Length: 601
Ligand code: SER
Image 1 (cartoon, protein in one colour):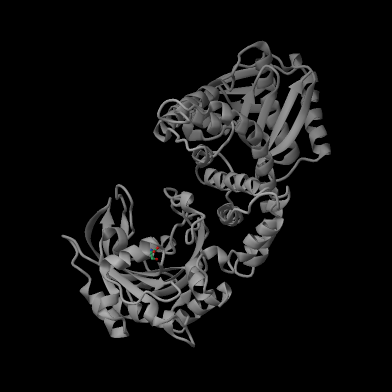
Image 2 (image 1 turned 135 degrees about the vertical axis):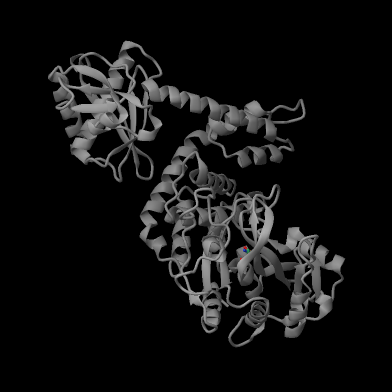
């Protein structure tokens, strides 16, 4: 059964049972800045599981895009993926345990309308209970009613049968409850009846695999503590498409299913015959690239923070493993085409974003390659064979910050040599660095200057002129994103969708040089913040300034000044001293962000 058929059958089955089909939400949660990505089908539904009425009713089903990076170092085994699709059906205070159990069993085993799985290969786990919530004997009873023998049902604790399943300190606030999971026997001959311990071992050894999770969400947690019952009892189901496909297509790993097989096959075809083909490397490339494509289609771009950093790590790791396989230079492009072709029937926005995705991957690859070779050489120099760690924290820090190596890459390079990395020390270094750069940007914000020498003053003033001239030529929506000044040049980043044309660049230069010829003075005035805003002076975030702000302006008086900006100075007194302004470079630094470098001659 193809994965497309699995998606359709799942949705159809629940449609026939009164569910409304809802589309997948974006991988980037819409109203929740506290989480980076949707990690489960239920995540976009949390407010509704808490009791808010859903506009589509009280029975829903979807195929939701999800991303989990906690297992990033497990990718390459048989069952883990960073990006995955989760099939889910929900009851928002409608049906509860009996129907949830009956329907999941029916869908999995029915030959005509379902997936036709062999019931003799199913095993069930249910919640074992604790001091707050009792053992789920009701679920055991219901499973027996549908035909699962008691000896194939196992009681397990919170780590296995509670959702959300929080590793480490539990701070979950939201709907929660015990779960019941369905496992499938993958072995050729079938394992038959298993004792509790035998089942746990079979799970460990991936002889059985979890394919379905029914959560009976009836409680509310605040900060990790159960505070009471939810007003309505809900059902939250999650079934990973990759794993279902693996079972239904008779494969022993998700990469052999039609969700991955065309990508892996192409990697095999194009990997150099001189290298021994590495199955794990191929799986990492396929997994990471597929995740990256979906992230980019949902608007994430590679950066050094948060979501963008996750994407950057995935891409850089994919590149590195592509190199291990000695894939040709256009390999990523070829693979992206396959991913988009395979997935666009289910996710048409991939096609709309094809060019953007390819461009961004190309740019990121270029950027990473510029430092990769140098970084690998440096790595050889940095490793040591004395002390506890082969790669100490300063070296790791250097590899990550100077050479843009994802941390896992440093760890893997070390592991290849049988060495370890000082992970904690590295984290401390990173924390220190972040403090310094925060202090640094506060300083920059005051003056925007690294060097207060005369040349830097000139570049600072030229930056203001450039900001205004860009707005003149490209439109008011040009927005400053960053600025950096040295005695040799200025660098200015701004939000703008496309490359500037040569004519636009020439026009910007001309405007600035014309102003310089006019010998306009640079003046400043301190105003109450509101008044300053009313002058129309450019500023970033008004709330980041004090009550009184200084506005620098270029021209004889504030009303008619050519450029006005919230700024702490310093600047030259008259722009006539700037000389000839010239743009030396205009390029993209991220999607939607351009960077200009300019000099004064
Ligand atoms: N929330 C549960 C899970 O992700 C069921 O959807 O497994």
